[in-house]
Length: 154
Image (cartoon, rainbow, N blue to C red; front, side, top):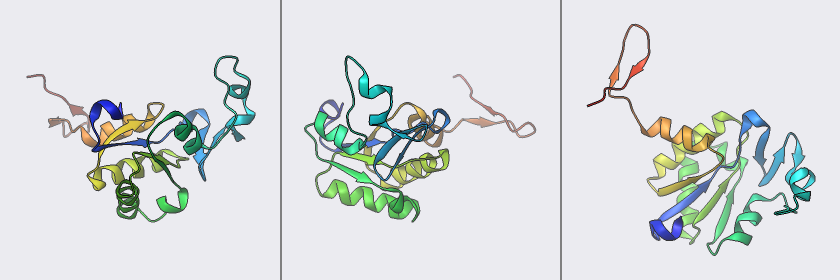
């Protein structure tokens, strides 16, 4: 995807899916509290996974420079996180793997991505993409009394 989009795009990897027990903390993917390499995916006959470090998995499968953004960076808010993202990109990183444990983390990562003004492609199981879309796509009309958003088809 990065090859097609051009060299000014970066991948923001937020591979967590909190509702299904999949989180990333300190760069490690945990599934229901177990490191990824200790789950059934480790013995998958076609594509076994032997490591739990998400950055390592992306580095091994890509020609692009990768970096991890850890929970300690998320704790400082969206502006700090946006600056961390931009600093990694300035160092030549095209793939940024971000810790995420909760939906609130995904909201923060989306806010920081937007604040950074980087051209990004979301890489995730769908939850981060949905979060980012929700923040970027605004409905055209709002129905005041019920609180429902209405989209007008023109």
